[in-house]
Amino acid sequence: MPGLFRGTWVVVACSEGAMILENAGCTREPDLRVIDRVDAPPVAGRELRRPLPEVTDRSRLAVSAFAAQVVARLAREAARGRAQRLVLAAPPALLGAIRDRLDDELAARVVLSLPKTLTRQPLGRIVTVVNEALERAA
Image (cartoon, rainbow, N blue to C red; front, side):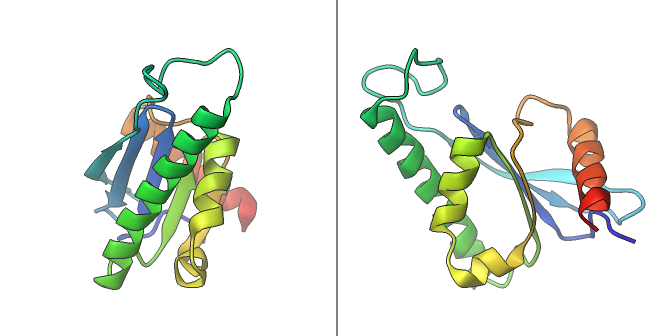
């Protein structure tokens, strides 16, 4: 039965930042806990969180730098023996930037990639969306 196993890390990210969550519960009763928050850098004097009318080189660089920051955090934890299973959820461009930076070891830990923005969702909704996606992927 697929599901959100105990100890699975769920990374939800968007242009505003990322939350790194861990399931402290079991598959039947997930209990996501916030491990860390990573703030996105500002873009060209404007916050990345404000929508830009067009994608600029500076905004692409900011997305790339933010993705590298998130991956570096995950790599540090993986080196400590944590984050054995990863779920990534982010808008498509950011998700792609994160996946592009994963080394083979981290990439092998990813059990699900969701091209969705879940950062403003309550934790219960994140659990529901992730579990539904894991069931579809099985």
